[in-house]
Image: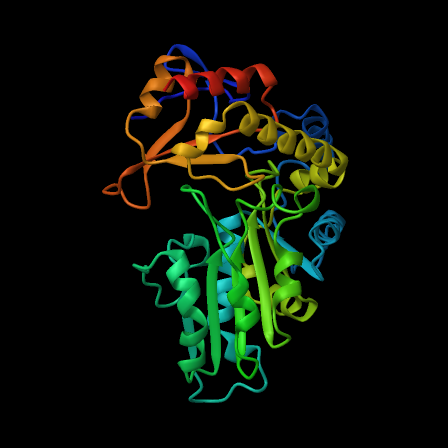
Length: 363
């Protein structure tokens, strides 16, 4: 069932003529309501307008793109970075680049092949050629992926996965990354849309952690939406310098519309606000877990992560009757059992968490 609103949810949402405490969505840091970010966005619009109607590879280069990409690379500890108009576009730019690797590799010759391995329920942003959904659990897939890579005779191997399960929360083990064969050309693509802004120190995401794990022969590319925790209408691509240079030269990147310059300006000038919001988010998660220990009986959750999920029937309707709104929907197809997804954000006050915790204990 859908509920309509004409305003951006914060702690509350006005929907279908009623006001609810809002505990869902993907605005984990609540930055859409951050006064500094909003003012910086308006300043950015005053300076750059509402869009940059040009290719990133055109004659005139707008400096804010380089400034934002440098700032994002520094924040995530990635060697280099590119931005795109969305997380979906960032992922598809990467997958188009990878399916045309022969154009960018002097060692690639006629007859050589590319083989893809897709993790279960991987986001469509990183679907490439020959995608087929996996029937395995992510744990089963993790246990089999190294052997599968060892068996293939393909010249180039592409592995695509998310950094964390969504909408049903699941922690993914990346130890398989350390065990990949060292005599093959391997690219690992990770969608960190639900991790960037949350995971790691100050929310820097998974790039640095995974980069430290991988063998030298493995190329790591991380893509993410900045429109979730970061509240910026853009996507990001993180990788080594040579890979980013090659991706930038592709027709798919050159021909795509770039991110809104004003949004990138707002990000560059609001970085301290992200740190503060991340700290508040972590405090809220800890407090919520402290006051509602019974959550572990039916919620699937991850330590220091703001989303809590369950397939238990009735919880969404019970909370709604008590003026608390969560998300409840079928995923990945309309035929799947509905997931109730509850999200604690940096906007919530202790009283909000106490209200929710009390209702959950009663339930």
